[in-house]
Length: 84
Length: 201
Image 1 (cartoon, each protein chain N blue to C red):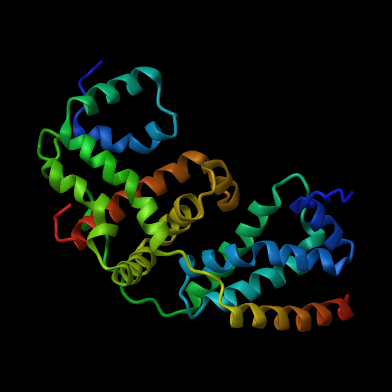
Image 2 (image 1 turned 180 degrees about the vertical axis):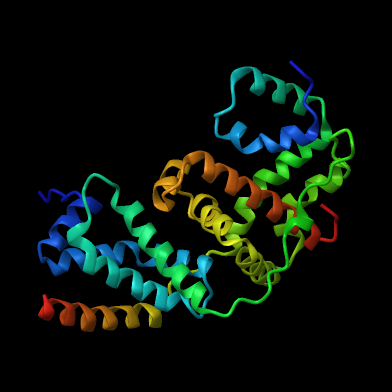
């Protein structure tokens, strides 16, 4: 098998992580990353990205928004029912 | 002895709600309101999220009769919420999007990473290196700058943590398409985090 360059390894990273690359490609990627500190560092930051953005964008439902939702649904579902 | 009643499944609640049981519909709302609101914030803005939340549950109520037990209720609900979010995004005048391609990783002519290991790693420490509030604002902003298709896939897969299969079902595309879109989004966002802490991706 041809030696994997960083660029083609990066292209395959998601498929690799989801277990959908063929076994020989997987072995080639493992071998490349094991010998390439740049790719090892890249993979670490690639894996951290979803977690960092998940934590940074986690909103909680404010009480007033919840109260408005209740009032809205009470009014609109009653109206919908009376028409159907 | 009190025997605890097992929580009804989403699908059981949906069937009862469709048959006219309002308490079952309320239970669905209570179970999912927090998640739908969080999703709405991630797919639109803080300003639009309350409306997306309301629209979503009203649509759910109106279409309960057409929900078929052969798909997962949660996937069906997320599909309604994603569509409601899309309607709100379209209604807003869009500012010209600055492409995020500049944050993609750089390679030399041999296909090797240009940046050093230290530079390549730094994005994973963005949450330690940046003020929480600053990061929260920047994160919201950059997710909103993703092209629509990437944004939906990335938000559902990586922020709401649905499986690739469930995202594919929610968006009505193939799992391979989801993987490709999420991957592209991750690459751009990773580079963005790196840039945010002052290191070229």
